[in-house]
Amino acid sequence: MRKNLGTVLTYLVVGVAAALFLVPFYLMLRAALMTGTQVTDPDWHWLPDPFSLQGFRDVFDDLSVPMGQALWNSFLIAIITAPASVMLGSMAGYALARIPVPGRGVIMGFIVVTLMIPTSATFVPSFVLVSAMDGVNTQWGVIAPGLFNAFSVLLFRNFYLKFPQEIEEAGRLDGLGHLGVYWRLALPNSGAMLASLGALSFIESWNAFLWPLVIGQDPTSWTVQIALSTFLTSQTINLPALFAGAVVTILPLVVIFLVAQRYIVQGITASGVKD
Image (spheres, one colour):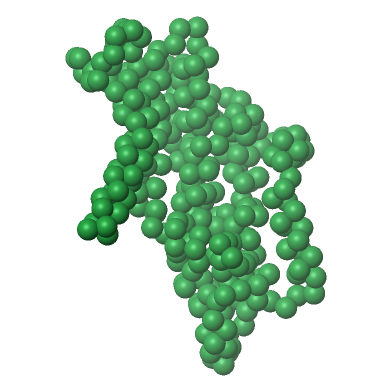
């Protein structure tokens, strides 16, 4: 009886937490399907009455906000940054964990120290460097500074430190060097880490705002977060369009999270961060 009561309480708490988590999504979708008058109405409406898709039409019909181009820019940046940064982190993590290079502990220490440096301290130097290389209003100017991720290096290093040495020794008996062992043995067995960090990197790149705002000074270079923010800085705020844009913006992230949530948990667990 006590065990059943504990199970019921557990499901109740989880259900309440899930409902609270879904409330912002409900409010966002509700406002996106309303008219401007309904959104600002002091009387509460649980559902739009009537349902209106005008907000979604306004998002893509507004000539001053190239939302379609912004969605493509964000997708392109995220789909390049995620695999590239994960692969670089994987290679660096394996090298620091398995290749006996003198001073690798010092190198790892410097990498960890970079995690403690606030982004604001490196923002101006990064902009000066990218600007000097004519990276303003270009996709690579947004992508390049985010390709190296010290957090990914740290997680991959911890993961490869626990990688079975017997597998590597078997590979070396077959004539494989460090690159062969990494590419043919270590990398294929780190799928959970690749998927989890890839998903997190995609989400981070998609949500980036300040750096793309500074680099993408031309509207054709805007990312989706910048395009969405213009609905707040206009002289008149189109609330249904703002919420509709938020719905469109968040959909890819929801899909990525639902697909990769299991791998995210597995990857973080496998990295040994809990130790």
